[in-house]
Every structure is written in C-alpha cells, then in structure tokens.
Image (cartoon, rainbow, N blue to C red; front, side, top):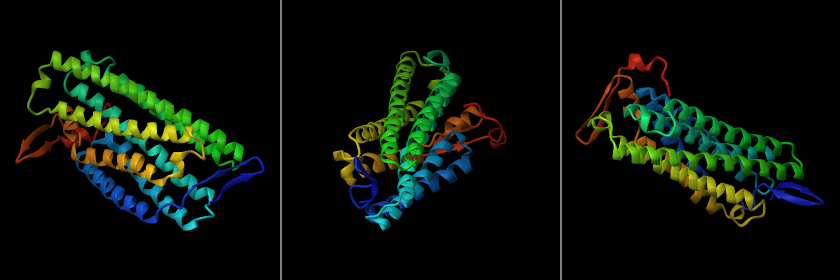
Length: 294
C-alpha cells in the first residue's frame, strides 16, 4: 500500500486505506473546538493555553493530511504521510505544555508555594523543558524518516519511541507533583484557597483528567511504535481513532468547558464569581496585556 521497499524488507506508510469520512469528521470537530479556544484566548488573554491552541491547529492540519493520504491510496506519498503522522504525533506534547503551566498558576493563585514539591516558577520551567525535549526527539525521529531509506524509517521509529518515553516519564512525575500538592493543600489549606472565588479543586480535577487522557494516548503510541511497522495496532485504523483522536479531542473540549481564565484573572487583580450557574470572569485586561509570569 505504498511505502519503502527494498530486498531486505518493507516499511508500509499505511496497512489500510485511511477513512476519508472519519478524517473529515475530526477535521470538523477539531476546527470547532480550536476556533472556540482561539476566541476564549482573545477574550480572556489566557496565554498559557496558546500551546494547546497551537496543538489544535496541528491536529486540524494533520487530519487534512490524512484525507490527502486517503485520496492517494494505494500509492501513498511520503510527504503527506509525514505531514499527517508528525502533526498528530506532536500535538499532544503541546497540550501537555499548557497543562504544566496551569498547575503553576493554580499553586500561585492559592498561595501554595510552600506546599509544592517544586516552586511554581521552577515547576513550569522543568516540565516545559521536558516537554520540549520530548517534542524535539519525536521531531528528530520524523526528520530521520524523511531521508527515505528503509533503514532510516526504522531508526526514526526508535527515535520517536524515545521521545514518547520522555513524554510519558515527564507526565508521570508531573502527576505525582500535582497529587502531593493536592494532598498537602487539603490537609493544611491556605487562607487564599478557602476563598469562594477560587475553585482550585475543579481546576485540579481538570488537569488530572487532561493528564490521564494524554497519558493513555502516549502509552498507546508508545506500544504502537514498539510493535513495529507490521504490528497489530498499526494494522487497525480504529485503534488510532479510539486511543488518539477521541482522547485528544476530549482534552480540547475539556478546557473549553473548564477554562482556566479565572485563575489568570485572579492573579492579575481581577475577580471571579458565579451567576446563574455560569462562571463569570472579570479581569483587569490592562494588566493582563503586559508580561505574565508562568
């Protein structure tokens, strides 16, 4: 079905014909949630979600690449395969960067610096650096694949596996740090954490859910690549949609609904309250227009 073939073996770009209908559905879904996120950021200036929005655009373009691949079956072109594969592979790491920064904001908003294993400023720098490292390794693996030989594709797969392993390890450590902060705050809550205008428990639950979704997806891709180009997972398209597409769409929608704009507003001197069942955020935008420490 199109790929790299030599006397020593074959690397198939796809072991099935990608579904045009499924790809089109996720183009529509990712475009809707990403457009809403773009509006929410423009309205509230919650810049910590910029990586997540960028990841949404990567998903959108990646599924366009998947439709192009479907139209090329069975003679898939390497360029469109790499476009689809690289963008959908890297987008979750961008989602993770926003989640890391959200935890730092929650800790600062609750005056919980002393309850965190890592100070908020260092926490953000540490995990975002790990995220960038994982991104760079995965991107490097994809770059190796562009050389076009069978050996290059197999080497690229191993490099991508290393990048995914970095992402999984980083997420595991992040969840541990978040849990320690959560337990300590519940045992010895700060005065700020008790304020009615700061629903930090809901925000933390959103981070847990988002982290779990990305973690499961990363484990799936790690196993998929570890099985090799002829593995069971890579031969069945439905596994990609169930364990990648649906989970990453859920992350995007999760933060549409539980948007962390009120945390940013409180840190910038604004206020947050509930009215008629809705979260109302009033931010001092002139302050938020300036530099924000993440």
